[in-house]
Length: 167
Length: 100
Image (cartoon, rainbow over all chains, first blue to last red):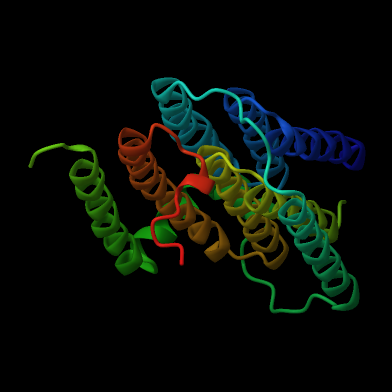
């Protein structure tokens, strides 16, 4: 049952991500990408990470994709006149396929090792996923969390500087 | 019980499709969306390993990747609007001022 469901979701994710790169109209690409994000959120739920699934939908499908669709509509971009030249397209596809073969061999040949941590399904069910994430974020990863706020501040200032005509 | 390899292979496929999109498309916004897709493929790897190893560190990394993606979206789209004001196009073939 789980394998069947995974196969279905994975097939939808792959098909919609192929649609992202083949659609001529950017709006259709953006909508296919949102479908990919929803499939990934489903997989996060299957991996017992419900909080990650929630912020995947809220932040990615909700905020970032709305921003992208907004910009596409604001600029009123028409469909692409033509793709890249044939050799660029060929080289790009070859690079992608080679990358896939490489990762496939690495995954197939190596055995996964590593010490198991303390977090298992029973603990996530008892304590709660959000609590575990929050505890980890505000104790062990407090410094990176604070530095992230500086990154966001820099991004806000950068966006304002770039889009304002006269400062 | 599904093995971790299924998730890793799905993530590799999504990453490869994203790479092909970045290298073959001309519209800057579509290229940007393909970059987002590659980031998401990596996020899936992080969460699969996090589940497999029983460790939440990978999910914290996903959190930071999402923050970086949001910052990137804000600045990148502002750049595209600024470029569109100058050139009336967001085709990457038109971005050739630094081309030798």
